Image (cartoon, rainbow, N blue to C red; front, side, top):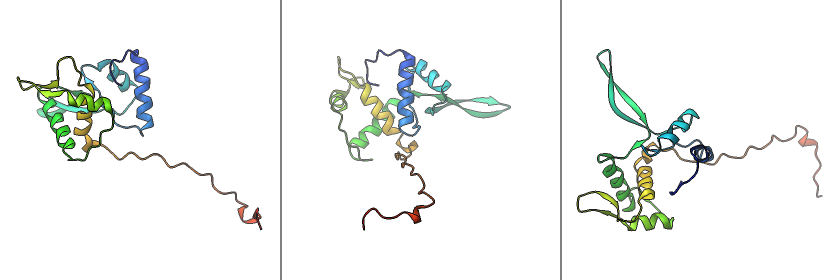
Amino acid sequence: MRPPCFDDWHVLEEKVIALCEYYGRCLIGVEVPMGLTLLEGLRRAGMPLFKRRSGGLRVGGLAKPLEKLGFQSNAATKPLVIGSLSRAIDGDPPLDLFDPHVIDELGSFVVHEDGREAALPGKHDDDVMSLAMAVHHLPLATLYRAPKPTHAPPPADLHKWKPLHR
């Protein structure tokens, strides 16, 4: 969903669910904390959500990894996903871009003097970041294939049918 998005959360949730179903119940990656309300609604709906490992819990002396929903964009994760996108733009894996909005955002995405990777002042980088998160998580992806249409079985008496043309 491209910003600015003014949909109510329940309407946005319905749109995301419809897209997820259309693409074969694909994995949904929501950036937190911006999408916490959306994330919670999708979780309640039983949708397949991206999970990240975070720290751990001590259970009887054993450390158990803790899974949290959504992608946490921060100073540690942002360079990782931007690096993945940079390699993909260079051809590893090959990336073909056709969306003029994304291409425009890439043109204004820079490394600032303080080392921060972000859009130029007055510009946006939401699509760049969503593309970077998607490319970074490609190893988690499965190949999307449209379901083959089901064909009704032929009639049992097909062998008795006469051809239309002689």
